[in-house]
Image (cartoon, rainbow, N blue to C red; front, side, top):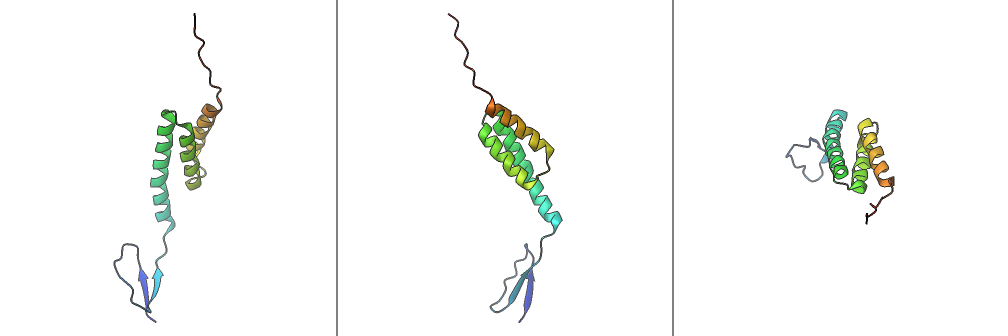
Length: 96
């Protein structure tokens, strides 16, 4: 049986009966993808926070931590979000 190694950017189509072997992805490639996605998640979370959408911000930050669990900046932002979510809503007293 013929064996064909296919890279991601390759346009080679295997024929019937041919064994297909995908070239493994390197750790550096995974880190590059994660870094790009993580920065987007972090920016989206900050934008939600600034707009007062704390639940959405928290979701973005939690997703970010799945990609980069050791990120301190995200943990700081999560703390800010949680503080805002637990603040009691104070209604102003109308003066007569």
